[in-house]
Image 1: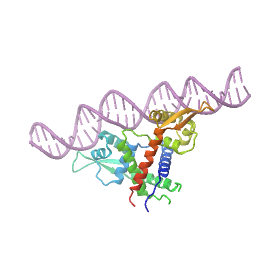
Image 2: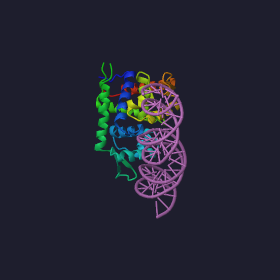
Image 3: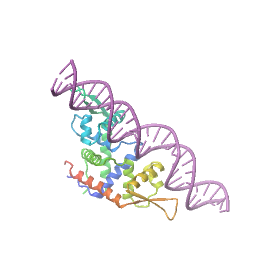
Image 4: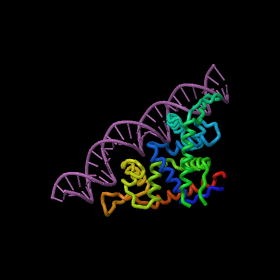
Length: 116
Length: 116
DNA sequence: CTGAAATGATACGGCTCCGAAACGATTTTT
DNA sequence: AAAAATCGTTTCGGAGCCGTATCATTTCAG
């Protein structure tokens, strides 16, 4: 069955999802950080700093700093590319997988509560 | 028909939506700002600083500053409550309505593109 | 009429993020 | 082997957002 979302439902879903995130977490990820995280978890590897920067249309330092931040949070990890040691490969972590799973569950729960 | 979203679809929707927002706008709203904006546009008035702060579980200055920022962007506007001049009523604007409409359209478009 | 309560705004110091530019390490080209 | 190119990081000054504490205005209670 296709996902058929009306504009009013889309807005309510967006609101309810953000509302829950804002209420729960003291400090949450920026839109850029979420996009980086989900890109790494949803799209096929490898993910490099340069590749992510080009894909998201941001500068390289933005990626580096986002990796610093989300690395501290253990949501992502860096690893040198053994083939070309100039590259840094961005990889998933257990904690990151759980975080992404929580995002998915929250979206699903909020979508189920939408009015017909 | 109910909105039936699987976890993998939810994540892709979240990713695609954020991706587009990040790529388009140089500077985007924070999760808190989005939540404030959608609360004002989706829930029945009146909306006061104190009421929004309590609802979102944030401090009052957070709301004041968000109103400063989104007021400059003309997405929301302040108005003194004539009945009780201590209150500030947060109201919609034409520009804000267009912005919210754009959010809805983007969500709908991305949901239509989801795999079955 | 005066003091307390309520409301939103402001001041402050701290933290994070930003883009541009410069930098060190590594690889590729000449 | 030297020079050029590539990649990610760091540095810099600037801007935004944070929570706490305080402030001015307005309303309400005694």
